[in-house]
Amino acid sequence: MTPPVEGSEAEFFQINRRRDTMTRYWKRSQKSLRLLGGSGMGIAGLVILIIFLGIALLTPVFVHFDKNAFDPYARFKPPVWGGPWLGTDEVGRDVLAELLYGSRISLLVGVTASAISVLIGGTIGVFSGYFGRLIEEGMMRFTDIFLVIPQLPFMMLIAALAGPNLLNIILVIGVLSWPSTARLVRSQVITLKERTFIERARAIGAGDGHIIRRHILPNVIPLMFANTVLIIAIAILTESTLSFLGLSDPLVISWGSMLHYAFTSLAMSNGAWWYFVPPGFCIALVVLGFTFFGYAMDEILNPKLRRR
Amino acid sequence: MEMRTYILRRAVTAFAVFLVILTINFIIFHTIPGDPIRTLFQDPRISPEDLAQLRHSFGLDKPLWEQYVIYMKNSLTGDMGRSFSYYGDPVGNIVKVRLINTLILVGSASVLALIMGVAIGTVAAWKRNTKTDFSLLGSSLFLYSMPTFWLGMLMLFALSGSVPSGGMYTPGADYANVFDQFLDLMHHLVVPMTVLTLVLFGQYVMIMRSSLIDVLSEDFIVTASAKGLTGKEILRHHAVPNAMLPLVTITAINLSFVVGGAIQTETVFSWPGVGRLMYDALITRDYPILQGSFLVVTAVALLANLVADVTYAFLDPRVKIR
Image 1 (cartoon, rainbow over the protein chains, first blue to last red):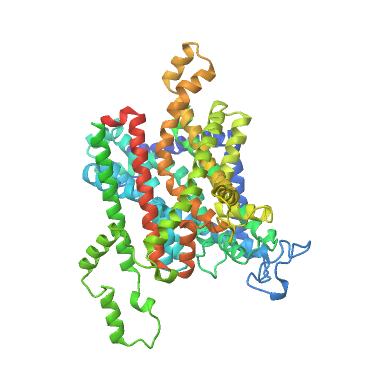
Image 2 (image 1 turned 30 degrees about the vertical axis):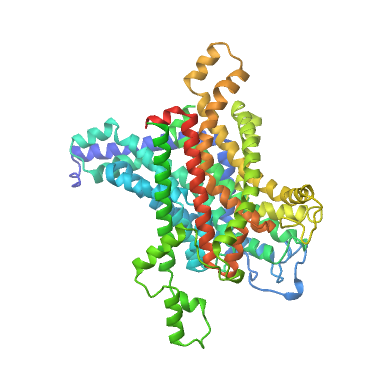
C-alpha cells in the first residue's frame, strides 16, 4: 500500500482508523483487566510470576556468593540463621544459591521451549485450517500420530540419543509438544474462515496472505496467548522431569537437576529436607502461577467460556 | 456405518500409525552421529578386520532399505534385539515381565483416580463459583502443578521407616501361601499407588468439572428442571452420564500423561516396571532397552486409544454416523 499524501483526506481517514483501533484495543484490554481483577486466581498467578521473574533477573546482580564453591566437610549441613540459609547439599554447596540460580534455567527453558512449540503448532494449525483438503488431511494425520506417542518416553529416547545439554532439552521439549496448539488453532481457523467478513475480504480481492495476516491471525492470537501461558507451565514441568532423570547438562543448575542430585545422593534417607523440598516447591509454585494466569486469560479471551 | 466396519477401520488406522512410529524409531537410530559398532566395542585393540566382521554380523553393511525391511520384520514379530546390559538377554523378554508390574501400578491408580475425580469434579461443577469449588479446583490444580517425582520423594521422606522404601516384594521373602504374597505386594504397592493416584486425580477433577459445566448449560438441562426435577435427579440421570462421555476419550488421550507419571513414580520407588527399566537403561545407556520399552509403551497406548474409540462409539451412537 502506498502511503497517503500528507494532509489529504485519505491520510485523515487512515489516522482516524488507527485511532479507532487503538481505542477499541484499549477498551478491550480495560475490560480484560477488570475481569482479571474479578478473578483472584489470575491476579495471584500474575503476582507469583512477577516475583519469580524478578528473582531470575536480579539474582546475578544481588547474589554474590559462588554457586560452584564446594566444601566436602560441610556435607548436608542443616539451615542456619545467617547462612547457609537453606543448608548445604551433598558436596557442601549453598542450597539457596543453587535455588536462586536454578530459577533462571527453569524459566529460560520453559519460555524458549514453548515459543518453539507455539510457533510450530500455530503455523501448522493456521495452514491446515485455512487451506483445508490435502494439506489439512496430511498435517492432521501427522499431528494425530504425535498425539498418541507417549511424550515422556519419546523425549527420554531422543534426549538420551542426542546427548545431555541444555539446547537439546529445549529443542526436544519444543519440537515434541506442539500438537495440542496445532489442533486448537486449526479448529479456531476452520470456524473463522467461513465467517462473512472473510468472505467479504475475499470478494474485494484480498489474497490468502492478506486474509491470514489481517483477519485470521488477529482473531487467533488472543486464544493462542492463553494457550502459550499454559504450555510454558507444562514445559517447565517437563524440563524438571527430564533433568531429574539425568538428561540435562550436568554442569547447569536447574531445579530439576538439583532434585536429580538430591535423589541420587540419597538426601531423603539422610534427612536433608532442606535440599529437596525447596526446588520442588518452587517448581510447583511457578507452574501453578502460569496455570492460574493461563486459565484466567483463557476465561477472558475465549468468548465461548465468558458467556457461561 | 456398521459397527464392525467402524472397529475394523479404527484398528487398521492404529496399525498404520504403529508402522509409522516404527519407521520414526528406525530413522532416529540412524540419524544419531557416530558408528554404532565403535560405540559398542570401544576396545582400541580390536582390528579393523574384526570390526568389519562384526559390522557384517549385525547386518550393518547391508543397504539401508534392506536394513529397514529386516528391522520392520523383526519388530513386528516381537524381536527387538538384545540388551547391552542384562547379560544380552532379548529385549522382548525383559520388557514383557516389567510390563505386567507397570500395569498393576497404573491400573489400580487409574481406577482410583477416575472414581475420585468424577465424584469430586461433580461436586465442584455443581457448586460452581463458590468457596467449595475454588478450594477443590485450587487443590487439584496444585496437585497437577507438582512434579510427580517430587511428590514421591516427599512421601519417601515422610514415611521412611514405616513403609517399604521400594521394590515390589520383600527381598528374600519366603511366602507360606499366595495370600501372604499378595499382602506383601499390597504393602509395597500402597505408597506408589497413592502418589500416582494423587497426580492423576487432579487432572480428572478438572476435566470432569469443565465437561459437566458444559453439559449443565445445555438446553435439555433447562427442560429437565422445567419438568420439575430436583437438582439431584438432574445430576444423576441427565448431566453426569453425559459429562462422563468426553472422559472416555480424554482418558485415552491423557495416557501420555499417565505413562509419564508412572515412569517418575516407578523411578522414585524402584518399582520394577517398564518406567524404572527405562530409567536404568538411561543410566547404563542401554539403547536397545530404551527403544524396546518405548515401542512397547507406544503400542499399549495405541491399543488403549483404540479401545477408548470403540467404547465411545458404543456409548455415543452419534459417532457412527461419521
